Picture 1 (cartoon, rainbow, N blue to C red):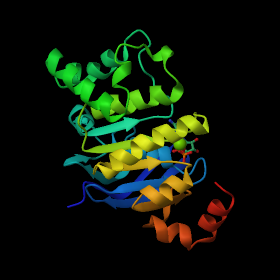
Picture 2 (picture 1 turned 90 degrees about the vertical axis):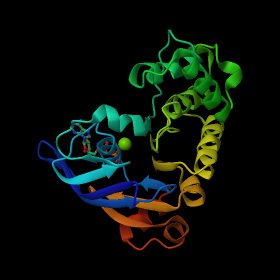
Picture 3 (picture 1 turned 30 degrees about the vertical axis):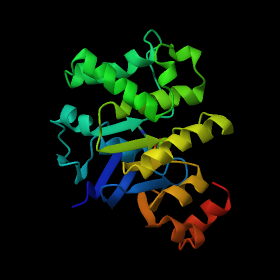
Picture 4 (picture 1 turned 180 degrees about the horizontal axis):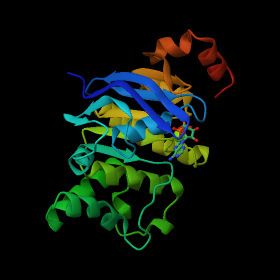
Length: 242
Ligand code: ADP
Ligand code: MG
């Protein structure tokens, strides 16, 4: 059974039809890259998957949670679906470790010491266990983004969503964040990532989804897609170096 099942969803903002009948099925452990021009609906689709936006029609089932246009179980959903954004939004007045412990303690009611152990574990995963007691402003952008990933991992999600998490970073810092994401992928995490990193998508993602005008224009195994995109729109997008 797929862990993410998106069935013919639509979403409009006012008169702007942003998602135009999107269907997508993701198996457990799959890595899916979502690419496409600015405004094609990539972020909106991700935000619908964890209930940050409601859908107008269609259905989404993710990690056993069925979302309709009524969101009643958002808290339960978000325990299982982690999301990382371009801007990491760490709390500046909390240390790295405190930032990571916050959600498990508040949302999951995890005991402080258990939350701390988890924080140390996930910080090791992103290579930052030596920065436990640092404050966000003492870290580079890449390190802050790795903390944001660790914070999401601390909730032990079944699915992780990444929305252009390296877009604000210099190439060097981008590389260190992508490395962490690649390790997560290799470790079997189910991941949907909106990215401009075509080489990463080609190499790491099992499936690449090209979105255009609020539709899944092409969705194919990444190697095949990048070797030979089928639609003129995808050809042009890839050709333009995205
Ligand atoms: P992408 O991530 O592919 O660049 P988005 O999903 O962010 O695309 O946006 C798709 C379209 O939806 C754009 O035209 C954008 O202006 C519009 N949009 C996104 N979020 C909102 C919102 N909260 N209110 C109104 N319009 C929005
Ligand atoms: Mg976007």
